[in-house]
Image (tube, rainbow, N blue to C red; front, side):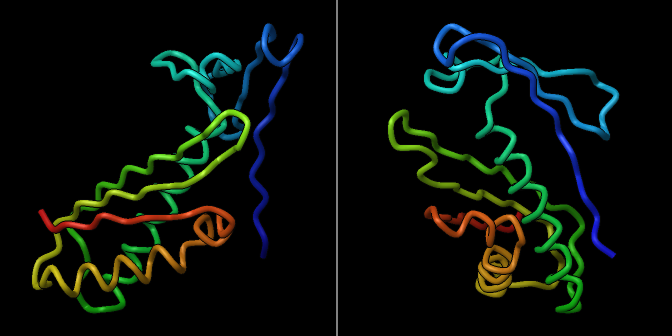
Length: 141
């Protein structure tokens, strides 16, 4: 059975002077601010579409890798993934870099790299991002 997830964004004003918010249907944390300045220059206090994509990519990849490791007979103790999504004004989203560090008993670094590459390719968010370059750094703890 399909599951539909929702987020709602409200924007006021022009692209460069305006601002808005984004909220997730599952979150009780309220709304998160968004604006062009944060998107084009970076910010520690305002989210961006790319940060939201990075969150989706990191969590999807971690789930896919966890499943691959379990199917391999080497379930992980811990997986820590950071996704870094790059946005270039005037061009758009140019890439996503996955950096994963995991604790997996009984696995060689080569085996881990192979399973991580498979999870990168098979993760539904990676597949949705097929139009950009996706890179991977994978290391065992």
